[in-house]
Amino acid sequence: MNPGETLLDLVGEHRESIREGLDDEQHEKLLTRLRALAETAEDDHKAVRNALQGVRLALRPLAFDHPARLAVDAIRFGGAPIGPESVTGARDLLVRLTEPPPGPDTATIIRTAQDRLLEEPALNSLLMCARCHAAGFDEPPPELIRLGDAERGDRYPAFQFAGDSGGPIPLVLYVNRLLLADIDPWGAADWWLSGNTLLGGKPASLLGELPDEQLVGVATALVEGD
Image 1 (cartoon, rainbow, N blue to C red):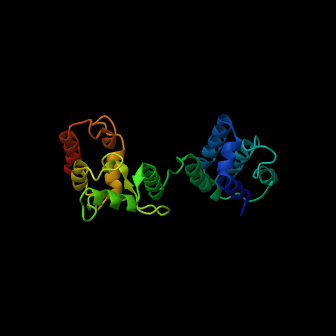
Image 2 (cartoon, rainbow, N blue to C red):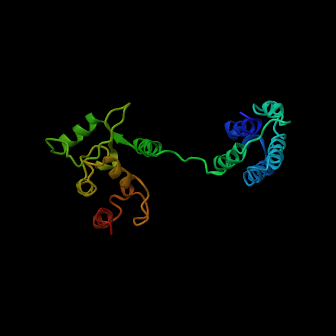
Image 3 (tube, one colour):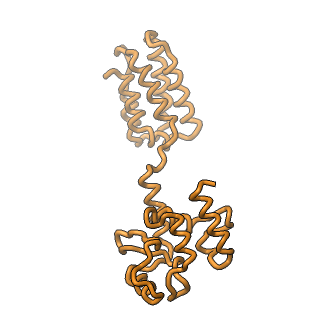
């Protein structure tokens, strides 16, 4: 590996700590030097060598104890051969340095949303069954939202039940059927427990405050895509 490739590999390997070790102006200077290298004619070895030296100098503001600083200082171009790989490498490196940081993956987003829903007040299976039995249900209604919790077992969001000891609320069961809560309990829970601009708040907190028809209408519009 020639000195040019070694230098670019160091920048790529330590790009995050280099960004932290340089202020905005210094980092922009590094990017400018890399752009100059990327735009250099590959067969102009002298120009490539000079552009690489510029990249090296742009890294000098790094602290002496930075993991890349000693390695960068040790690089000597001298008469070592400089090939076109340095130019193509600079182009690839620029993409890595300027692309936006990766966002959370889909699994992380889903897990975060589920954790938020599991923080809401809820009944465990025993309390849910007791409430349903007291309300005259032989079996728990399948429309009840059931959220699986690896640590605490199944959780049944408390808004589905009347007061501190009542059974399932008929309106909630009806809307849950519209939302296909038996198939997508997390999606149904998210509808009830997230802000809704059409209703002016969380649907679960508006039970008994808004007309039943209004809640049903908004849920129906969601399902039908209106």
